[in-house]
Length: 78
Image 1 (cartoon, rainbow, N blue to C red):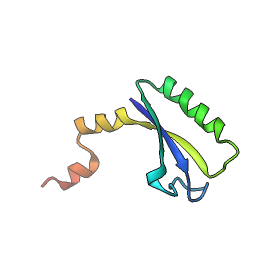
Image 2 (cartoon, rainbow, N blue to C red; image 1 turned 45 degrees about the vertical axis):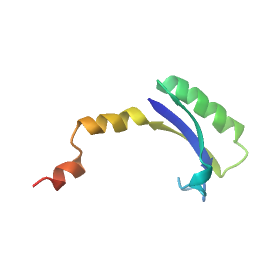
Image 3 (cartoon, helix red, strand yellow; image 1 turned 90 degrees about the vertical axis):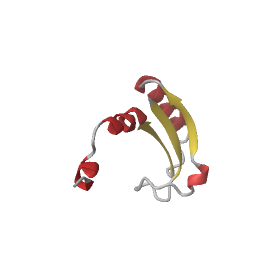
Image 4 (tube, rainbow, N blue to C red; image 1 turned 45 degrees about the horizontal axis):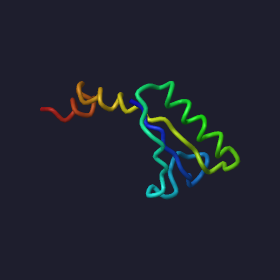
């Protein structure tokens, strides 16, 4: 499960959005290949704006973390 999203960054050298209320949520995809195609199209459409950047979030990795104890979770256990 992959989410494609993007928007205007404060600084092109940092991955911090200027306004999180204006993040462009493109769509979720069942696989990386289709997410990459959408990411590429959005990225190419905004290539002239150095402050706009799109990303692919690997949501399946977050879901998998729920099934395994994270290092942080282990540290909190007595």
